[in-house]
Image 1 (cartoon, protein in one colour):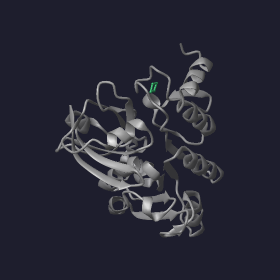
Image 2 (cartoon, rainbow, N blue to C red):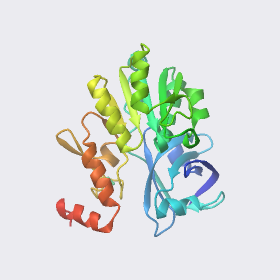
Image 3 (cartoon, rainbow, N blue to C red):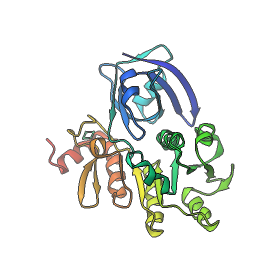
Image 4 (cartoon, protein in one colour):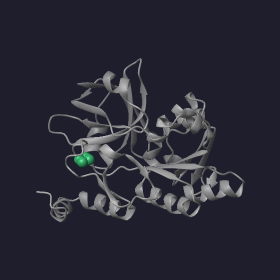
Length: 283
Ligand code: FES
């Protein structure tokens, strides 16, 4: 059993929990994810790791209540336990796997939005701990739904906030802020975009035009998390990839976002899931 040691409401139906999971805490790396199962019959919920403390043996997860399972999860209190907490799954972030001297030569910009700010945080924290300066843009519709701003400010070289309604700092979305930074003379050799698929799609369209290599972290529906069920399949260039074992990070300029969003929408209904299985010859 995996005990909840801390529970905090962040904003916009987004919750943070520290879970006692020493084995996962010992091995996980930024970019990886876990699958949480609340009880025996519970749905398997994939969540990216937001932070970890190897000494305390804790892993921080951040989730938004978007359906019945995550709503039920938000009802768990400190002291209660989850039945299963499987991980770390997926590949660590491609940047932290680079030789440090090469990484230090890169000028990296992270662009995150919504609950996607959570998986960006451990990557930026890792960069700071290894002496790599990176800039971060957090985009949100409005100031009230920003999460992890203070935490990110401590680890980013420069943190820029972009709000659609202009209620805080820059008025506009993440793409507008990238253009604004370039207009101010900034430039980057790599962008990492993590957030809602639609946001990642538009960041990638822009960075493709600007010729900046871009990494995205895909968050499709996952079922088994082991490459067996096919639920998380994605078209990446000419290849079919599985986010759970080949990702979750991919070259954003090769990902077929329209297909990924269509699959995500279909998976929300029983009928859609059956249709997808039929189309893919999955029996
Ligand atoms: Fe089943 Fe990835 S979640 S193949």
